[in-house]
Amino acid sequence: MSKRNKIIYWIATLWLALGMVSTGIVQLFKVKAEVDFTENLGYPAYLLTILGVWKLLGAVAVLIPKFPLLKEWAYAGFFFAMSGAAFSHLATGTTNHIFPSLLLLALTVISWYFRPADRKTILVNQ
Image 1 (cartoon, rainbow, N blue to C red):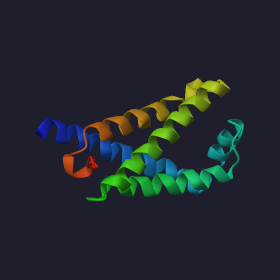
Image 2: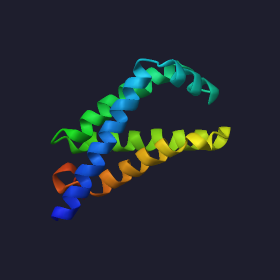
Image 3: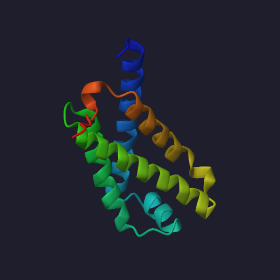
Image 4: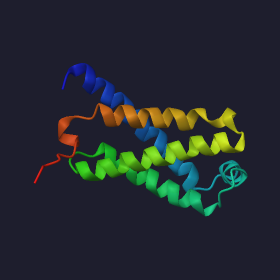
């Protein structure tokens, strides 16, 4: 892996982890503005607890060494959560709030794409 790719990977991964941890904490503490906004999107408030826990665990998974299969699941979870959030904004007409979802979605894809070989799952033909 080239030095350039390592730098891209770590910048994207650290920003992704920071974004997921910060939004996960806000969701776990059920900050009133977040609860109100989530309910305006049509989702129940208890979803915030689920998303908050998953985001914190996913951030840990993408940062720790080893466990490539766990990382794949974390990346998939981030992708589904952030693309779902973006589509929720489109569906409810709250596109002025879509940027954070799209940013975290982009960071997820960039981090996944540039991850080092030791952080990838190896598929073996049998």
